[in-house]
Image (tube, rainbow, N blue to C red; front, side, top):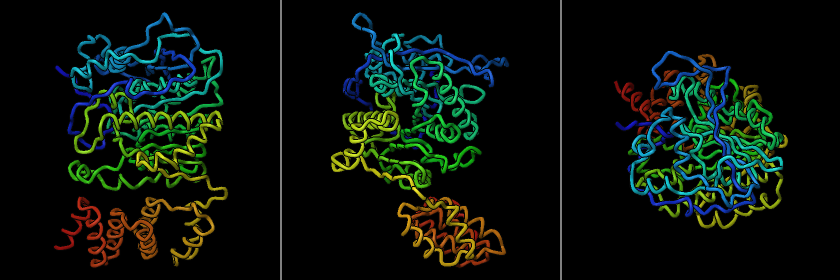
Amino acid sequence: MRQILLFALTLFLVKPIAAQTSLNKIDLENGNYNVGFKHYTAFDSTRTYSRIFDYSNKKMPRPIHISMWYPSKQNVADSKPLQVIHYFEILKEEEEWEYLPNEQILNWFYYPNTPANRKHLEETTTAYANLAFGKSKFPVIIYAPSFQASSIENFALCEYLANHGFIVLSSPSRGTKTRWFSGDNTMEMETQARDVEFLIKEAGKLPISDYDKIAIMGFSFGGLANIIVQNRNDYVKAIISLDGTERYQYGLLQQSPFFDAKRIDVPYLHMAQKKIPETVLKEDNIDPQLNTVFQLFDSITRSKAHKLKFNNLTHGHFSTLGILFGNRDKRQDKSDSEIMTSYKWVSRYTLNFLEASLNRDKNALKFLNNTMSGKMVDDGLISKESKQPEKDGVTFQDFNDLASKENYENLQSLYDSIAQKHPRFKIPEGNLNTLGLQLVFNPDISSQGIKVFSLAIKLYPGSSNLYDSLGEGYLFMGKKENAIESFKKSLELNPKNQNAINRLEQLKQ
């Protein structure tokens, strides 16, 4: 019987075709170190956990399965490197199927049992088990995997960083009470954040860790947890997001009492998938705003931030396992060679961003500046946007304090005057939407909410959600014709907006 498991926080369904890739074809450049690898289990006694397939009421301290890649100078001439199958044996342990025969792995977990995938299991990696630690102090990277994924999902990237002088620690993304996530993703986000914080403390026990140089890196759902970790830990000096879900589910972040965009005061790099094609948006019922809206990035004012869009990658291609074993979506995926080339560039950006942010390396900073404005952009491989921190930044709260004093009159003039003095000033769409609804549902000042929405749709004319909220405001105020006009505009921008469809049906009756 095949065990069906969810590997990542999937944004759309996949119509598969087989992939033809290999570790060698990714062609990551070697650094100055050999890569040591250790895997062990620690326990967090402050939390309890149940092994789901033991079918027992027994509770235990929360197990934290830790994969660690690290730099070593040990001679490896007489040693054998790990094969991919050794990483999959770790996956078995994390999935609580320790005794599953190796020949069943591809039948049981995630990926089809094809000749190509069986060949991948035999591939040689650059890591060696239990090498001696290097003699220096090294920066520490904590990696947070995607939705319910394994600590080893991005092993090639982790090896690459260790090869160049970084320690990388990772633990699986698992639920609060059992291996599986519950339906409460806010709780699970907090759980993964606590797991990342556990790894930060674990790194402090290593004699080779430079505890003044800690960065966090996450793929997909792991990106959400990392923002929470950075918000409440001064140890964190940089954030790398591999198409992190903080872009897609900003509302989840806002549900955390620890989240505040103003607390992001360290360098932030977000690398995103390409624009999702119209065909996929329609067939998989995806909100088209996922291609354009990034509220977190817009809200960052206190740190240097970069967002890169990799035009040859889709979401699953930001992990090693996705590159090697994942099926391809014939509706949108590029060729395997293009995917592997882009993954190599993701790895190079990651390395140079860390070198520049943690080690203040001038060559790495030059790499980032040159490639972000040169051939990579010109050739269409990436699209980029960067911004510097506001030295004397104006926040949305500042804007709102000024606007409220004037009863929200002349908002466009107020916005223009601030933007002229502070060119990087930008009001997040979600803030305007929330403020507008807060005001409009207060019957004493509903008209002020309409004024806020009037500014919002000028700043974000392509937002179906804003027109939908404006329609709700007019409906609350009893202005039926205005409500109909707003809901129609919302539908024009997003024909699948079910709320607008329902409201227009109601208003016809």
